[in-house]
Structures are given as C-alpha cells and as structure tokens.
Length: 350
Ligand SMILES: Nc1ncnc2c1ncn2[C@@H]1O[C@H](COP(=O)(O)OP(=O)(O)OP(=O)(O)O)[C@@H](O)[C@H]1O
Ligand SMILES: [Mg+2]
Image (cartoon, rainbow, N blue to C red; front, side, top):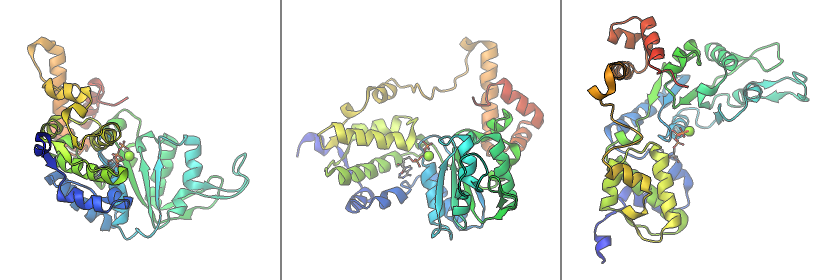
C-alpha cells in the first residue's frame, strides 16, 4: 500500500451504500446528507411541515444550500406526494409569460391565445407549486399571488369567473426578503403571508464536518456515474475542506468533486487537485469572500460606526428570524427607525 493511500479518509458507509445504488439517481436526489445538529433540526422541521396542513412555506438559504432539494422533500413527504410537483423559476420566465403560465388563459384573451390554456396552478391542484427565486416576481403578479394565497381562488387571464384550487405554495429565495420589503421591491403583506412557516437552510461552512460526509456522498455518486473507484479525500484535503468557507455551498462542493473526476486520474483527492483559489484562501488564513468584520481605528469613526450598526441590525434580524417588528423591538427603536437605518446602511439589496 502506498503512503498516499495510507493517509486517505475512506468513503464512509453512508457514501458506500449510496454507491451500490449505482445508477438509481433518485436515491441521490432525495437524500439530505448530514448530521450536524442544524441539519437534524432541519430534517425534523421538513418532516413536520410536510405533514402539516400549512399551505404556504418560505425556504431561505444562500445559493447552493439545497433549497430546491428541500422543496422536493416537502412535497414527497406530504399527503400531496401522488399529485404534481410544479417547479417554476420566477427569474427564468419573462413576467409577461409567467402570468399565463401560472394562471392559464381563456381563448381569445390576448393576441395569439387561440385556445383555452390550463395554467400550472390548476395543473398542480392537490399538489405543490415551487416558486423559486420569488423575489424576482414582478409586483403585479405578487398581488395576484397574494389574492390566490388568501382566497384559494384565481382567475384565468381573460376569464370572468374565478376557479378554486387546493395547492401548497413553497417559495424560495437566497435574498434577505425583508430587506427587499424595506427597499420596496417585495410586497410586505405577501412576505408575511409566506413567512408564516419559514425554513432556513444553513450555509455549508456552518455545518461542521458535514462537508466531509457530503464529499464522501458525492465521491460515491460519481464513482457510480463515471465507473471509477476513487477512495476518498487525502487527510490534508479533508483539513482544507473543513477550513474553506464554500461561498457556493453544497453545489460548489459537488461541482468541484465532479471536476476532479473528469480531470484527474488519481484514486485519492489530493490538495494539488484543488483550484488555486481554494488553496490561497485557506492557506492565506483569511477568506476573501467572507472577510471578518473587524472594527478598528484605521477605518475611521464614520466607517467603524456604520460597520458596528450594521452588525447590530444583522444580529437583531437573525435573532428575530427576519421579523422587522421584533428586530426593532430588540434594538429598542421603532420599526420606522429600523427601516430608515437599513436604507442608510445599504442593507436593502440591489
Ligand atoms: N444536504 C444535501 N445532501 C445531498 N445533496 C445535497 C444537499 N444539499 C444540496 N445538495 C445537492 O446540491 C446541489 C445544489 O442543491 P439545490 O439546487 O437544491 O440548491 P439551491 O439552494 O436551490 O441552489 P440555488 O440557490 O443556486 O438555486 C443539488 O445537486 C443538490 O441535490
Ligand atoms: Mg435552486
């Protein structure tokens, strides 16, 4: 056995059992891998919400954390599982099309509407609709969606009568939606309607050694897909994975592992297989993507004060799970004053 192989972290039993599933891709798409306390709590919350009668659910998580995956789990574990799961990316469909895609239209409702069309909301009756990147939905449609969430009825484009439906709406965003409300980009009433049941997915860097379990899992997945026998991460690679901040989260990790499968022949993932960007950030000791918010004299009074204020507001928003009223209460200022501060501090998104 070579020295290199001796230092390898073997793919764990979890990953190996997945490998045996080989080409059964659903096994890979359905598992929420990890046993960090935050992930155990997330899994319990998903199971509870899935079984509950909750009609609206909001999923929040930074990019690549698994929002789409959680939405599919919520559907699969619910009593709606045998009905449709309709996945709509609000950012990918032009808003002019999105309305008739969602609500359908009557014959002759507009030029080109030569037939009556059943929309996705109707098609998903008794099932689930996943509205990904909900922040990108334009205000007019936000109003129509709110009315649908309130009344469980909608009107096809060009229709006189309303149609009743029973659909669970799962919305997802990687933006702090409350900031978008403050900036006037997202309807406040819709935000509070969606936020009744909110599921927050933690960033990968906050999940301790789950990054290693996920690595094992993806290695097993791509061993199956590419007919390879990569054994695992070298010990030093595992150290780097634990220190790196993973700004692209689980997707970044998966893409990195697939890239190594494609470009490298070795059967252990060694540090020299990793991109310079990762090695630089870890070995340099700092993380360019997530600089530590240090407040010191060199910043000058104004910048330092603002940085401190921003930290306080962020803390209050986190503690109140983004409830503006509660956050204002924690800071002992009025809601209006908090909004004003957020705008002043540039915390209201693009
Ligand atoms: N805990 C997990 N276990 C296994 N696979 C995961 C996990 N979390 C995410 N993945 C996988 O990582 C990839 C990214 O997940 P997903 O697309 O659900 O993220 P997202 O939050 O919707 O990303 P984006 O913000 O870019 O839309 C997918 O291939 C998903 O199957
Ligand atoms: Mg997604």
